Length: 469
Image 1: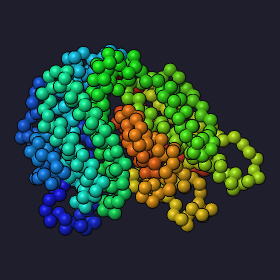
Image 2 (image 1 turned 90 degrees about the horizontal axis):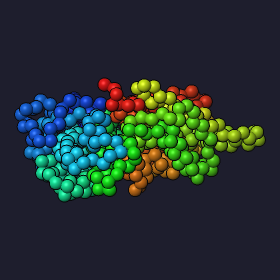
Image 3 (image 1 turned 30 degrees about the horizontal axis):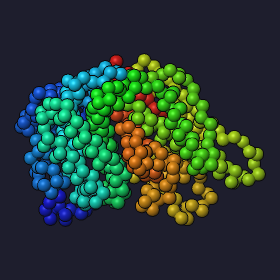
Image 4 (image 1 turned 45 degrees about the horizontal axis):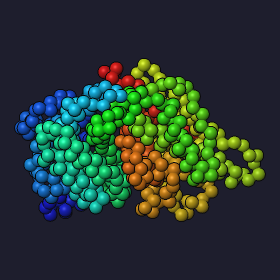
């Protein structure tokens, strides 16, 4: 995107504003590119892979403050393939803190890889229409990426030779992660203001790529931060972990813990909560980042809890003399095959209205009722349920509640790689982000709705990616 020059500023027609570069950001290419890493090798010259990434003419304005020459150089370097086995290799054995050599090798890999990926994020924002990239919320995030890129790219990965060098680098990573903690809610506000300049599909394509890449960047950064912490204190987080990767995440324990948190918040928010019944294998484990699955589970349970309770309460509001019955329970089933761990969440919250179902994974979808609709008794509960709530509380929405804040961590909370995502309550980002978290690990997330009865939601993650090609 060219921020400088009056010609760009005059490009205001909707057709031009909706234009995005002809190459797709989603699925993003970074995690699947085969590029072996050699910490001792300097970055390749731009001419070696000049056709890999389209590079626009650069200026300090059009690069959001990033040094144009550095940006061009790093855009010409293909990212290293990000796999679970490669991250585990850098960290050593499960339950054992990394050695000094392993820690420094991880530091050099991280210092080399992050600028390559950050450069692509800056270039991604440059691809936006001028008026969208000029939005203060979106420009703020673009400038943050540009600043982080410049900071890491100018440092040089080959300068990390001692433990003292690593301590300084780890401190810089922690600062960077903190600075980017509110990226998603800030972007949400920006795109809400700019949705008339881009189509819903264009916004979804951009955000899918941005969030998918953000997960990869945070995974690399927080993995090294965790390894550095384990080295300092002399022990890992769990007896089976390597950095933030756990080789024996127990699905039952994770679901049980998340359901207790959702249940408590549901009772404090709505005054009641359904019973949850967890079925299937209680011994099923998988290899991965627990916070990824936890984010998905909490978001889906929040929807099920809320839909179930609100449907039950609304039934008695409409039928005050009806016989009182318990709130229908929520069933969670766990199954594990040789390759996959599968989870099904089944509720009786009324399901999703057919007109809403095709849009539940859209970021810009909104069916929040206006003032007239709020008093319209003809509107079905399921049409106004959790899956339909996509408003933004700070921009005129009305659903800023504890259950909504739960799955995004709220302000200042920490949920691993999803740490401090900010208050996205009512933004409608929970479901699409949950799907991205599931798909980032080569899994899936699907919802089947039986309108008028309830929903079945299915999460599938790889049980042991180290054993799968």
